[in-house]
Length: 346
Image (tube, rainbow, N blue to C red; front, side, top):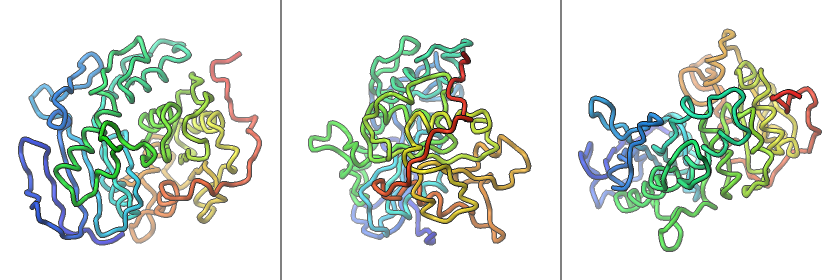
């Protein structure tokens, strides 16, 4: 990793944390923080699903984050991250020449809706699609366009383009700025966010999907639907002690997504890049038997694999996931009969 230069944080409207000079032409990494409600006046809270613009104490809850490193040649791709902000991940994405944003969208439904047992066949997949698109796909929630991921991301990028032209954010907008240019977008997330990223990519063609510790929705079948995004553009990475792995949730989703067509499951701790050009990566590094640590260990952070010198042990893996050419694929392998695809039972 390059040593980070001076960092600037700006807010779209409201309080300015640090001034970004209009004539600042210095090449550096810029970290930018904006409230969704300042970028689009139409956004609303949805307390019925625990999704709000401000918490009970009046503290803003709708901050969004972006970063770009103008010292690095741009790859012309925008990563939209669908979970809580992870700056160590964004630092790495920027070092690859990728722009990155984390959006605040109506995603708090997961612990509230579709909780019946057994859950409906399409319940969670439909809510994921409504939360991502802001269009009416589910009877369980009512998430309008301005509160879905697509429009939150669009208005965030438009604000970034206006406030920070040095970052060249406008390249991710379509010709009339009415939408993002989704052919330049990588959708990614961990856990809940990785599952929504995969569901969205079934609906909307994107440049790539990176699913960390996911996707799951083990009682749903949307994973096998025809995909607007070509199957070779989906990449997954999981720890083998993650409950989603030990219960066959991830292997099931990966096979229903068709990823076995592009190579075997590869243990990154026993292999080297390009990992047989596969789309299915696992790790078995020591997490002291802690399934919770395992679940969050596949992204940069305190629970990730560390080398003896304290550096992260999966740097090559993250670079592979986000930058490996999608047209370079491994040899197809059969589906694994030991991976339970019918988790509803007979």
